Length: 315
Length: 108
Figure (tube, rainbow over the protein chains, first blue to last red):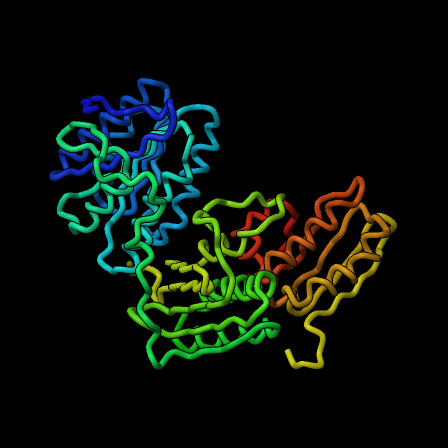
């Protein structure tokens, strides 16, 4: 069904990718989507990690209190954004909501894979929620980005037309390109095997992070992240874990490998209720503390790679 | 932490019938979780209405240990939220990212 009307999420999740060529096209489509939401009394959250939608901000100022603007500039780790979307939905429980996002599409393969994974996980994180999600894509983006967008979004909007995406793969939770093998650590990487010696693994991480030039507050973050992951090895596996650390591309990289398994693809992306017990909290903590987290999990075990930028203000 | 030294130390006093004052030092993680619960058990058995933890000398805490401090005290009948006094930056950061800072009273 092709329509010129932006969809409402009142009947359940509508997740659409907007392919635009010009800023005018971006603004007019997003504004139409936002105004349709306001007209229907639906709260709208607009987020942007980059400059594209910033143009829209002055135009949204007169849309009334249903529209919330959240600049997420500086949030690189896409695993944090799912919680922003979910908490907006939770703040308006029972009401249809709308959500507009635009990301800066990174050139680095690891960042790109995680950004695409986030898009795919929206279908799971908001499944059954009364939400309409519009994700803006500049058509000058890498062809692979646009191909992935067609596979992760059930709906496409282009030239003012909303239509089902023929390439959308409802039965594929995560596109396979997201789980491509990570590059191997360099031969200069330092390694430590651990199990009960939890304090030693934290001390090792802190010493190497400091030696790499990481600022004291980020060393703390790294120690907290490594501590939770090393604790998971102890609690959830029967074997040793391995910590590997190196520096590359202006980042400290810190990798934890053990025989554990992560069964929930949303693990660590949804804010845990502080009063509730349960697992997955370590992964949430890790996602809040690092600039990018990559997880690979399978029968052979789990590898979690954390990235922390040496200079936090540089993207 | 040298192998023969305990990873953490806990001392307790009862300034009045309703209050337990617990001073902690060292590192609180999965390897100390059972010992921490064991040492807290007799303190909480007295059912203090208020538990104050002085954690200025805690150099590391994980989510599980922070929850042990906050929720075991919270269960005491008629109890108030526990007080975490003088948390160092690394502890504050953990409390903040877990939302546990909303479950206790933090005193600088």
